[in-house]
Length: 337
Image 1 (cartoon, rainbow, N blue to C red):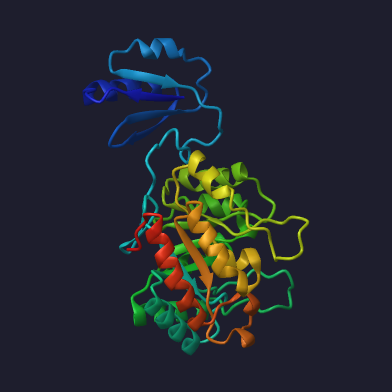
Image 2 (tube, rainbow, N blue to C red; image 1 turned 90 degrees about the vertical axis):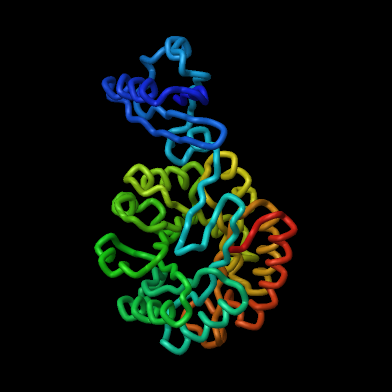
């Protein structure tokens, strides 16, 4: 249930109303926007009569909602959430490009790629230190050493770093990581999500390979319910019967998410397609349907990459793609801070 308060509602009366609900074991979520001041009631509200609440002088309107997610719900939070990452903003008209290799392979590789994507206009740097792979014999990442190399690249360029976590026990290693990524395979690792809810860092939550949009939002709700409001959703393609691409990029998810939730939404065209020639057109399409950012794989020598070389752009190709991204983002009225 959502209660919309009158703009001139005295704070003492608001607090008394909140205490009234808390005495009934109802949790409260407050959202004070430019236009509206909302109180969300979280819990069993079946015994609460909306007409009784409407009769209170500070209440303008009462709405019941059906969705099981509350904190991620746009009805509770009408204004877009803007996630600030070391001064780089995502959401609410702010667009960011995250770029870098699928896997951290060496110091030279990370620093050269980081410098190249920064020069082209990327705001954040990605790189996998821990790599979940389908085969146990595939390259699993450099792990702790990979995190150290990411931090070195961060010091060399000043770019915030984004990297994936595999297990909650690894959290102490992520102190210098700016954005913690939850991969598709861990989207419903609920113990990990609950642990990330207690972390004071933005979380980039990728959609599961076979997950519905509501299941994805509920995973975000796990993080937010734990106390961390800074969640960025990432559409990275879903598993369908189609074999022409690695996955099927669900571009319709972006406008649907914009209706359902206030969280920023970015798109990963690299993992979705698995084919480097499709990255540019899919990036343009993602911007057109309202995405708040892109995460693109860039490798200094894709042919020799230890992971996902076929879907990685060279720095030169990324630079060309970025020129078109900048123009498209400007055309749709967003800014790249």
